[in-house]
Length: 294
Image (spheres, rainbow, N blue to C red):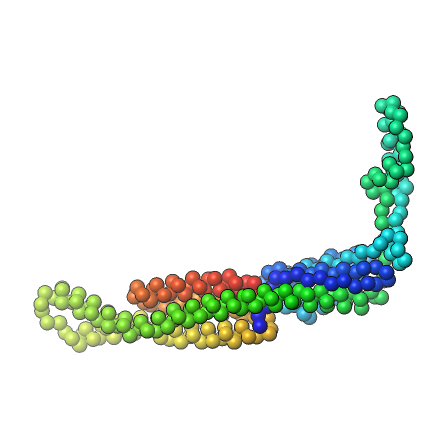
């Protein structure tokens, strides 16, 4: 079953008293491109993370955010620290302001610790090698979550593809049924025109047949229809594939578009031209949807 390129997934794990959160988002992109945000002390794991993502996802822009949450002061967790140099500056500034404006307000501890950045959370670093197994499992779980969403969107795309391909098949049937009639219509038009110009003079029937044969050969679209139907069959096979087929689909629709353009240029029949326009409209919508396929 086809899979969408867009989706979101997340997972959590606990390591050394800390809650580790992995979020992953997939967006449309021609190739596979990974962007990773994680704490500085886990930077050595970036290569491993990209490798694992590449093993499970083949296409799209993948944004991964790994963060660590923990209760300040908890065992193994981060600690609150006072930014003493900054607090000293705050105190000096407030003292100067009080003296300058002759204020009676007291400078209290509560006032100082509530000033911006006076108190901060001191991170306790995690050893990347020790944390890798936990991060690996959480990463895989987040990718599983992402895949479920991509699969769900893929099913919707699948239904849209099938519906549009069925519509195109119906137009192709109309094209095929029109082919024999095109030559007969041309014969009638040409015969009428010749009789009109000849003014009642008997025309050469063999020459007329020859002209009709030349026209029929130039405007024959049977070969293009056969190739187009072959492309439709290939597309149906792709829809049931479990592998990434977005690029192949895009190429296949280019080939379909080329064939239908040739059909349109070969035939001057209004009914065929109308069906060609409808098919090209559906192909344009399909090619747009293919950009969402992994």
